[in-house]
Length: 126
Image (tube, rainbow, N blue to C red; front, side, top):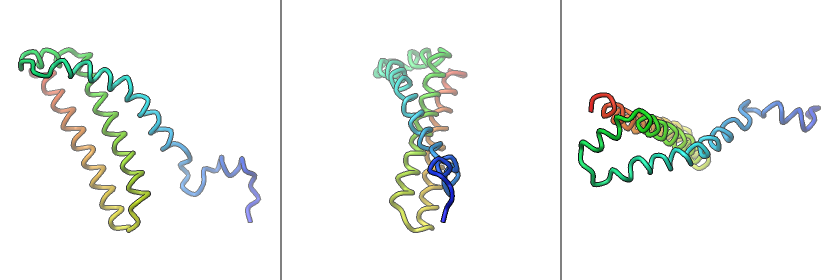
């Protein structure tokens, strides 16, 4: 029997001690992705069919390179957290759960870092 009030149980954050932090972080990243996606599309879409020199010149602009890198960071972190929730909800075997979480995390980090490396390489070396 618990002697805590409803407020005390809410403030106690439950057995996981995480509360709504994960949920709020996902929503914050989703909102941040709106302007970053628009900026990404405005930067990258005009480059389709352009010459190599035009693409390099575009990504050597620091503002454009930073916006694309921010887009990649937020997108892959949001993807990682979203897939983690789906895996935790629908995979029930402990071994499979752990394996999928590790593969998902490593995959998201690998693709995100590869994209960031590509933009940085163009921005710094041309």
